[in-house]
Length: 563
Image (tube, rainbow, N blue to C red; front, side, top):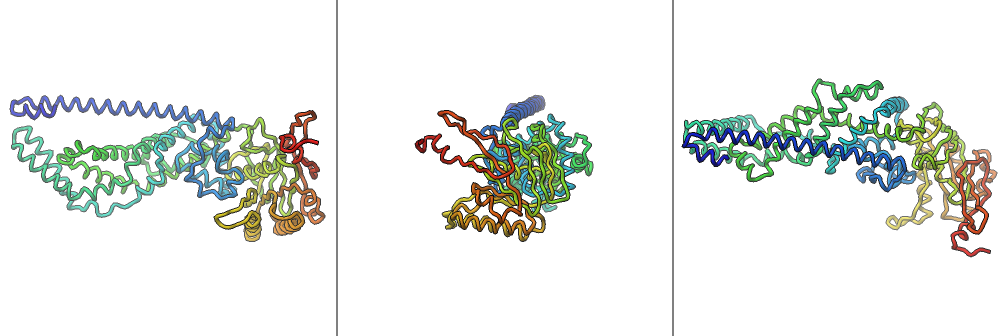
């Protein structure tokens, strides 16, 4: 069509052909935009379907059907967090992550690892309770988050990019030159079509534009560095912000976050759409054929880079705050989803004393219909010694305490009928292994973990909860018992509270420990008959377990021969 228009220039019908060309181009652009909108709606519905499948997997505790915890978050968690299944495969993290952008996931990780103040916990609890009733909103926000995550783009990179200063790219004299050159080329096109000047005049304008482009293109393109990766993320972010800013909430925490989006009267969603539009135009430079004509006639990259730099100057202070709201609301929505999917869980109660008291507490990662609930009572200066045979539930009970405490400290609901807790730190020694890389034996690895626990208790400015699972297995029983008694005395002397699991009845009954705490235990039984099936009930009892099951278990599995 442009060729025909130019060919017919001397015959007087070129304007009509140019008009037809313009109409066809406008229709084409409209169809492209409509197609893009349809694709976005289809993708949004597919994301909702994915979220529904994940919700069913969470309800059934089918961790293999859930996304793995984001590897980018691994540095935020320590070995203790892995030991208690806070992060990693089949963990609490799998029930919370992957429904948010990278910023939301990072905020969830921070809440799980850094205890909130009592005021923060109360505010989050109120916000979570309100969001529990907004399931459709949570799902829509999560679907937009999946769109943002579609190509692995982290919104933290967007924040870093927008605050990067593009100094010296557009000196005033060069801006004037660029604007004059563009006006000259556009005027040349009109003048040539009107027959006022010969085509060579337009050619002169084109040469000037291309020379200017060749001189400054490298500097302009630096403004685009890191922007192309946002291709899919900005549309989802704009939709996310538009949905969030339209909400009205009653809880102070949620209301404050929405107010931050409305703070200066500028619509964040519109600003992000504007950025998306600028970058969409800028991506024309990746099409060499079209880009040549665009630079020659319009200095396309000059105007796109200038518009982008202006957008960054205007929004560089606002965007980080908008993204902060995204992180906060996504974290609250994730914990609200956890509460919605576990209606039997309760809101934790913060108390002034450094104690933990719970009724019917269960392991958050076990399906509620299979989880066995037990009480928890831990007070400063006292140790709870847990005895029981292999697989009876000692370590699971310890993780029940740890995970529910982390949830409570984050402001979340907890897997219990009632859960009261005070402010405290938590340390543990649950999983130990030797280290060839560091040249540490198994026993030395145990010693290092125990030392870390003792040092934390001695140096902490606040009460400490310790969880010790089968300490010092790498040495003989006599020395182990003496060492553990001394360790527990030290911990109790510093008013720490905690638990120790052991198979050793002699340790549990040691006279030196009788004034330091209490004994609880789990036990099991074998069904009579040839099969000798081992049955556990995982019910907590007070006292000391006298049962052992190692030999009978080995015989039931055919490892050892029966009598």
